[in-house]
Amino acid sequence: MNQAVMLLYYATTAFFAAMMAWNFARAKDAQKALLYLVVLMPFVMRLLRLK
Image (cartoon, rainbow, N blue to C red; front, side):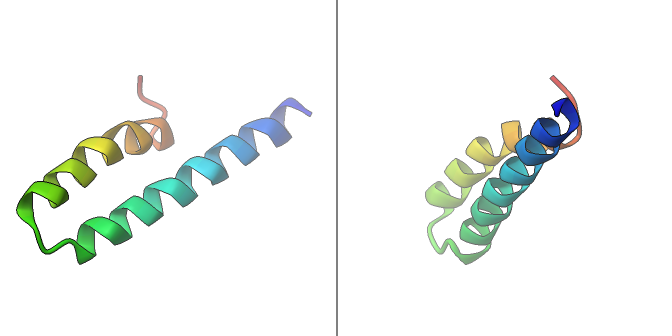
């Protein structure tokens, strides 16, 4: 059960990270792109299992 919850957690995190990366790639404004990078960083760190 614990492993299923962990798998679901990482899948959800990967999904949101992918969506933010997609928005970052499509961003025309540099300020919005920087904002996407700042928001994306915790998700990438969670996927890499860093604090």
